[in-house]
Amino acid sequence: MQSLFDTDGGMEALGPGAAVLRGRALPCGEALLAAIDEVAAEAPFRRMTTPGGFEMSVAMTNCGAAGWITDRKGYRYTAEDPESGRPWPAMPAAFLALAGAAAAEAGVTSFVPDACLINRYETGARLSPHQDRDEADYGHPIVSVSLGVPATFQFGGPKRSDPMKKVALRHGDVVVWGGPSRLAFHGVLTLKDSEHPLTGRRRFNLTLRKAL
Ligand code: MD3
Ligand code: FE
Image (cartoon, rainbow, N blue to C red; front, side, top):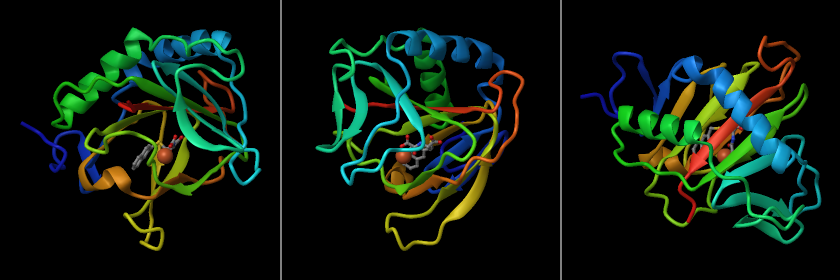
């Protein structure tokens, strides 16, 4: 049985508790992108403002019981989309199935996410290094799914000053971040101009979390 800490057989360890499943979402890529379009029809992508007053270059939306937002007041999860006042769209079944299967492959049984942040990168967009600390229980992993044009992801340790290593994340790559990697600093370098047959010049990233 493979676990987060093995590197054999299609699973690559990025760090302690972080496993890359290369191409794991390739068979369902078109279904995931269709589901993203359905979510965005109800809850459009928007560029949010950080507490410091900067507009993020990455456009975001959410689905599931809880959605991650930022505004001048801070970072948090909400049950409703602040733009519409309505609940976030339901989590598509294809997201739940992929997240559960990927977590199981990495040795985490019964992962049932209640929040999915959907990030949309256009050429020039970036995500500066940060920790994901707005969830109730860091014992649950985060599953990320990369779609569309490739990006360079950087990932360090629990301190901002820890050295960061770079890894390419391509269409269909799934990463399970658990254990000591759950609170690692991470970010995405400026997206280079390139094209993907399914998304044009864009990259989408799903982050599936148990937030509540
Ligand atoms: C490592 N998103 O939404 S996904 C984010 O590609 C975020 O859009 C990036 O960081 C993106 O918060 C990276 C990979 C990822 C997600 C969560 C992590 C890596 C992580 C949490 C802890 C450690
Ligand atoms: Fe993050």
